[in-house]
Length: 108
Image (cartoon, rainbow, N blue to C red):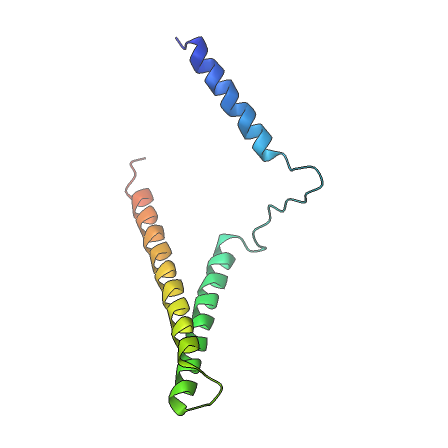
């Protein structure tokens, strides 16, 4: 029932996929994400977000205390980095919850 152009396109896509999976000569490709898998990566990401927030808060407190080596632009940049990281973490959490709900609502 399938036509030759569809078969040719399928074969071309399979060839491209196999070429993409092969490492480039002289280049080391690491496929390991982490030792603990998804859970450990998620925990590490949350810890990085927490460190960014703590660093931004510490710098803001130092600026408010009048420390001479802390400038306002550095404080604002660190606060924006922490805010963007938090928003990214929030969006990832929302997507995970949405995916979980979709899986739980699937009919078996």
